[in-house]
Length: 210
Image (cartoon, rainbow, N blue to C red):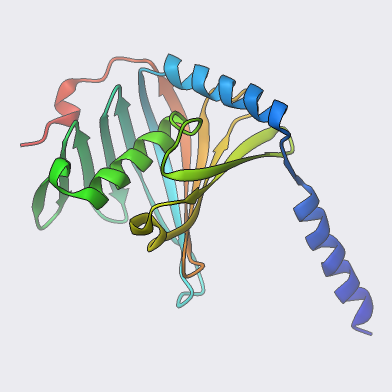
């Protein structure tokens, strides 16, 4: 009695895998060139985001929401507004992490792991740097009309945390739509970028680090 169901699930799993097609070398060159072109044309970004965290000990995903600001070359404000107030600000070599209870300033020049983390954040949000990444082995796939880059970490500091990072682009390759960070444990975090406003004026005070 269970065989038809088992066969159905196996077929469904196979179709899911088949839905992801690895690009050929020539296709990779074309897609990477378009990604780089779009990244170069992006000077600022403001968008909402929804973050979902899957943990083995919980039956449901943990979800949070907030606002993301980016300004070239190296300014980011990642602000959580729901269900808690938490802000990550990067301005050049300085990082500020602020919660309702405390504020912590970090100089990333003297902190190797933080320097790598901030580089990952910049590259995944903008889609830039994927082409010539020294920190990751990168494979490109097509899924339906859209594309995604699977980034496998090379450096041991990042390997200790992440098994892979997947960056999903819209079909036109002009915008990163989703980022999936897969941890060594198998737990993962997905960030969806929503309602993007590209190349608009963003006040410098947004990125102020005291």
